Length: 296
Image (cartoon, rainbow, N blue to C red):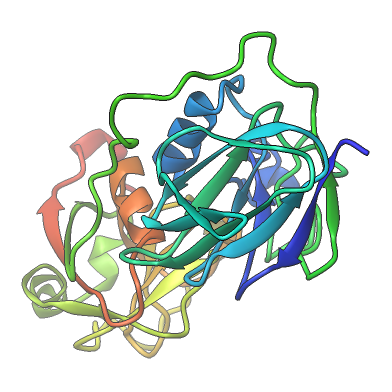
């Protein structure tokens, strides 16, 4: 059969592609790969078209068995790669023979590695995407030992080995993110806004694909008793619940929320957030929103 078999699913391994944008009006998150640049590059090196589905692992990797000849690229968070117990290259196309076992070990830095297979993965789709969404439950369930996933047709032109491993900037213990302030900046006291951009925030262990929970000084509101009607939430939004500890929303974020959003980070910072481990430190560099984009 033309499929792969999950021998070791690890802490959390899911199927991810480009996601399902455009369904927010039905309360469906965009989902998709948490670290888009790493997912996209792994697929490119595997010879796949844009948007192909791959495996996204979390912290301790995964082990898979090929049931046809297939090329695999392990990218994203660097990790040890072996095939039938022999060391292989991370960030390079690796040829698997039918029956071979590939192991992607624990992430050496970062959180999420990507296993891209030539031809892409083809689990059952929902709303046009193969992505697993932790919040809505759409897409394939998080993978378990023994699961099998169909493979797509092999590319007409198999990928060639590259001279160097896939470029990946990696991630340090401290991450600096550009934060576009607003749209609900006026809901916070000036000293709270100052604390947001001058303090160092720590990623909580209670973080996942839905969002990073950050620990630091409590951000106090101008009017603690005020209530904000629910409004749309975007990936990269920094929302502040009543306890004053921000949540940086990721790929599986809710589509609406009733707590004020104090700022938004862009795609580059969202990719970095996807690789931030519990205990990582984050600093925000403030960028004022244009006057025309501010809301009252």
